[in-house]
Length: 251
Image 1 (cartoon, rainbow, N blue to C red):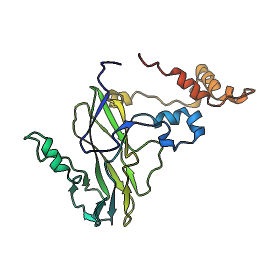
Image 2: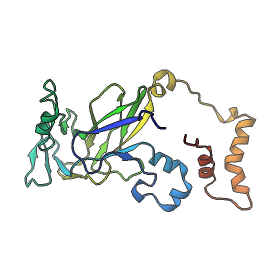
Image 3: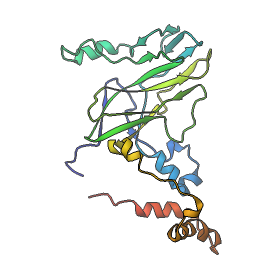
Image 4: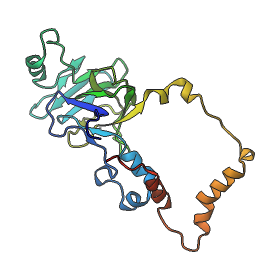
């Protein structure tokens, strides 16, 4: 709506030719056409949130103890014993930062005390509207690397104004692991703080089969039975129904 503050603001501190963008229901064309047309559950999850890209290509190598990294334009492996900056970023940061912030540019890569643990900064800072936070995770429904896993976390970005990073765990040793700037590194999704509050999450029940009442059985019939006994079953009924229930955007 005109005049409404944005739900999330991304501040691209490190220059990036691929700034954050709305997540794609087709995941860049990797979702099969059949699923894109009929599987609303899958496409809704795929399109929920925003993609965040890395500003550059780089590689990491871990032998189980020592960790090395390299990037485009560098012909050697560099030791990563603690933390590393984006190339030339600290000077750029200090040229823009006020005096009391100079010297505190965020680090790009930071080793964890956990074996194979690595924190990767996207070059962004995110700020969300009051009461909204960001669930930070790997890209939904995109094939994952077998060499590392992306951990998930919720950052309270409505008041924590810091680097938008994520932690990964390297799974393979003695193998160079490539990270590409051309593929989304993260998918961040807006969540209200109250929905992951412990009191909210404790509000659930588990029922047995003999506890289904007449209304439950009728709903099951409409969802499962009726489409299967119809003379001509229409595909994508869930997708059609879900799209009809979506609120109409305000003018």
